[in-house]
Image (cartoon, rainbow, N blue to C red; front, side, top):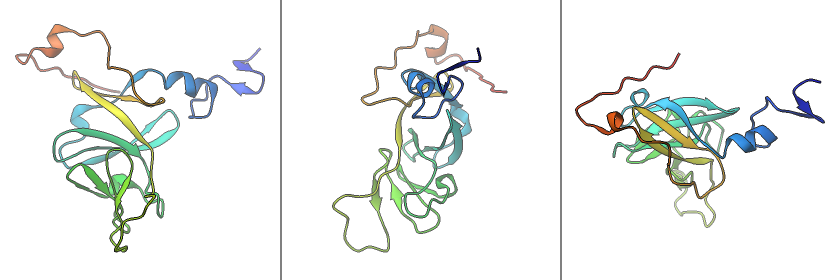
Amino acid sequence: MANTIGKTSLHETGPHTLMGQLLRRFWHPVALASDVGRGQAAPLRVMCEDLTLYRGESGEPHLVGGRCAHRCSLLHTGAVHGDDIACMYHGWRFDAGGVCVDIPAEKQARKNPPRIAAYTVHEYGGLIFAWLGPLPAPAFDLPRKDVMEDARFHVLAKIG
């Protein structure tokens, strides 16, 4: 018997698959903290989802859907404004919660603004961890290591 139960494949990790739903109930390291600097954005593919990882001008990392809700252009090619990210195509700006907070071509804000996916992230030990499951995200409770919290040490992480 292959790694399937009925017609459900256990190696599929999309958000609507059994394994995808299970794995989204854990914190996952998704990037090196050094991969994205202040005001920068990068594409990220995690568990069959295309996402945009960006660091706001405050220094906080954020993880949102990979494409704009308007014309589906890639958000990582846009610009970071404060802690929001703006699409390069028409300038729709999304906050860290995935809510469209500005549509430049419209004079009035919409009652129900467009939304994209947004995920909780936590930076620790040179890595950015993401919670891709249902909200609210649980406390970031991975085992702590003294060496990773001591400012005298610099942790080098390498992927690949």
